[in-house]
Image 1: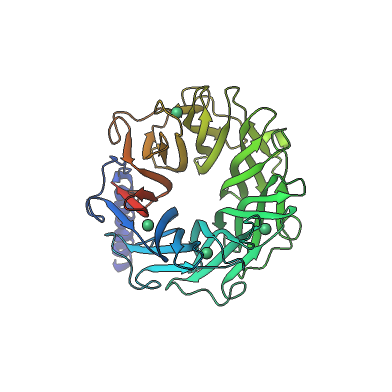
Image 2: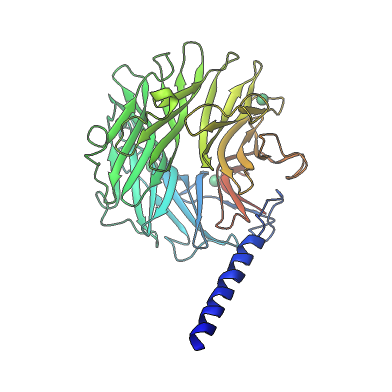
Length: 438
Ligand SMILES: [Ca+2]
Ligand SMILES: [Ca+2]
Ligand SMILES: [Ca+2]
Ligand SMILES: [Ca+2]
């Protein structure tokens, strides 16, 4: 009887937990600022690295009730430069006093040039914060940036078991001995992948992928000695640039741009985890481009949900650049049922400089894109599951604006009840900013 009762209650428990999950409605953001965060939903920070100048957030993540922002900050050296900067906040927008010095870590001179050090992207995995960007190795010319990868313990100390004192840099990935730039990072169970660009011997950039093990050694089983580059994806034999990276179902996807014959074309590459081309993508070539007869198109961000690939960036409408969102099927064909024009929607301020720098997808397949609006404002805009601006359901007419600001990075919290966006606001000078939306 006892056993029967136990089984009965186990089944009851399963039924109740099943009911609970089915009754949970997916959260959909209203686009209103979250007034429980910072001052009226916004936090700014000035002078992270002591130079009382530019502070900028490029990328943001939320893990275990901590918010981390990676970017850069002006230092106070005799010849000032930018230092890589990491900020850690609590969920109410106060700095996390258990991280670095009063919630902030900076790093100068990762590659020996004592010039600019920049973080573009970060990830938290294996109880480490991995940060990628670049560091100037020759400040006299600023023509030899090196890809830089930092690893930190969660108290903000450099990770003694990674690279050299917690830092790895890489020069000359594509043979030009010039600029190597890390733009985006993705960490798996065993590897750290970085996407960006590297100058080739013709002084053009190639899209570049680096793969490292968790201690900062290049992976000999990936590409050629841990590196893959791609030149001339779009036929113009000019610059190829990777901006955003994600990995889903053991396939690597990199979004960016490639010079075409007439214009820069939005470009999406896909690889297997060993760096070989994903032949199930792009008709076997592993790359697709979007060619706009009106002018340049470029991707800045990528998200994949339910086997659909979403990109945000910019595309020229013939008069000026519009914020663009594309949706692709997983084989690289445009999802022609999406958006206002066969897989793409343009969002136009009527001015120039509308660009989607970051994208997240909620559980209802709404896409929320953060970026710039008429160059001088930050924008957060929601597109519904059909790729139309969610004009009745988000903020005002589907978008939020903040003047004299730029948005670069965004992330949901764990249950997608909050969206955090980072970038900067122009106050006395340029200050790192975080906006929290509910
Ligand atoms: Ca520096
Ligand atoms: Ca270099
Ligand atoms: Ca425009
Ligand atoms: Ca500042």
